[in-house]
Structures are given as structure tokens and as C-alpha cells.
Length: 236
Picture 1: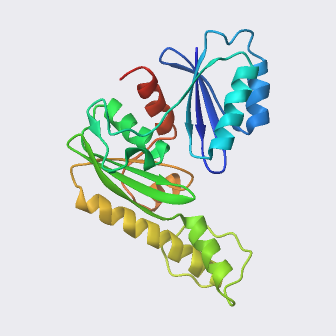
Picture 2: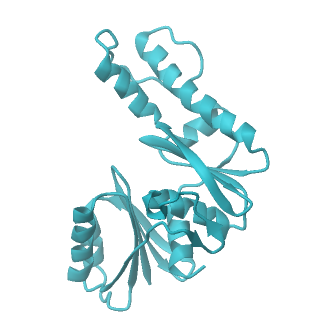
């Protein structure tokens, strides 16, 4: 049994696997994870593989949680210069946030050598792999962050309305801000896809489904980080 853990900026996801079979996937906090581990009879032969984008203090807390549950084999993934033939574009490899690296590894595990990984979350990150090498990426505000930034940094833009994703001109302040935020992300994503026409395109993150509905062409994958963790853990 392996436990894969994806610690993001705002949530924690974990997945239990028996070999290649996914047994269970859940989302919660540390308390929920601890409760789930407590239901397992024996974790002494279990390996936990962790992708963590939070600070060292949080990583230590997570390590302690697994140790207390009886799981002593806890491995934290990190970005490196090269893995399974995939070369990291960063001159200081471990400064590439690990979930971005693992998502790229997931596309490599799927057999691709040229791909785009678009993670549309709090931030929208776009990473490019070409002919087996990571050539770099882009980071821009996610849709929600773009909206919140306008509200926080202007005096007149104020609204509480919830507006559906759209690229059409808005007829209220809320709709104008929402359409502007979606258009910014949609335009950037499509421009990068245009620049790399041979790339397989994968979208993940909280806004991925809406981007596809708006017309971005690519495959929506919810568990790219887990796929990358499994690939990393099992030595490619």
C-alpha cells in the first residue's frame, strides 16, 4: 500500500494505492488525514510519498502525523535537474515548485515528450516540455485572484454577485470583472497553446473545467500530481 499526498496552498488531497490500482482519493485537512490513517490497522509496511508546496514547519507536522500513525517510510518529492530523461529548465532545480515538476513527470509517464501543463488554480501556472526537456513556464494570477486583486486595490470596484464564467462583455460591474479575468486567462492559455502546436495539452486545477467549457482545447486531468508522485516513487 502506498499513500500519495498532495499538499497545495489551500487544501490537502491524499490517495491510497495498491500497486497501480487507486483505492481511495480524498480531500481535507491534517485532522481528516489523521482520522483516515487511524482507521488503517497496520501502516508499518506502507510508504507515503508527499508533494508539499507549504513551508518546512508544515512538512515537519505532516511527518510527525505519519510517524504517530505508524508509517515510518515518508518520502518528500523535490524538483531535481533530471529525472527519467526529463530535464529541468531551472538553473537551481529545486526552486521549481514541486507540484509543477510532478505534473510534468506525469505527462512523461504517459509517454509524451512534448506537452503543456496548465494548472488553473489560485495562480495559473503553465509549464512547457519540448522533446523531453522542460523549457520553462509562465505564472499569472488565477481567475479568482485577479478578481480579488481588483476589489482590494480599487475604490469603486465593489460587488458580491456570483457570475458564471464567460468571455462576453459584462453589463454589471461583477460581470465585467469576471469576464475580464476569464478572458485574461483564456487568452494567455490559448496564445501559449498556439506557440506549441505539437504539444499534448493537459489542464488541471479548480478553473480547468471552465476553461475547457469556454473553448480551450486539452485534456482535463484531476490527478496529475498523484500520477507524477507515483511515477517518481516507483523509480520511473
